[in-house]
Image (cartoon, rainbow, N blue to C red; front, side, top):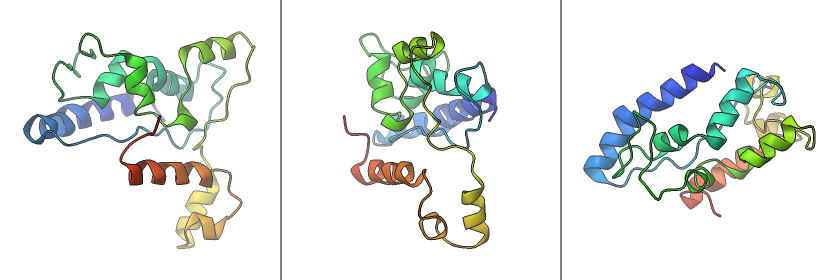
Length: 162
């Protein structure tokens, strides 16, 4: 998953669609940003690591999630004064994908084992699709089912519960 492509895609979505909708209607919400189809280790400088690190630490990423709100400049990647990057990310990156700056430091120092990316590349999803079966029926023991369930819960609740 090329980081630049993903971030550019989110920027275009945020600035061309979500931002204008929020400006005109006010009630359009990005419920969550979910990394998926991950395949590389995150304790090395891989594309997956760079994407997860961006999603979990950068103000520019947080600004895309709030595009169109007063004081947010998604094009320059800034939030309004007084808006905390951590709070925005806590409210938009699901707990299973949330890796804070201190955790990245611990991973890099070898003090913490890197978590496995929760929604990673697996043949089971494609195989279930080809078999025209839902993943829970096709592979009821699939380790990623709990994360898909969490995403469904976020959608049902209308956001991430803190």
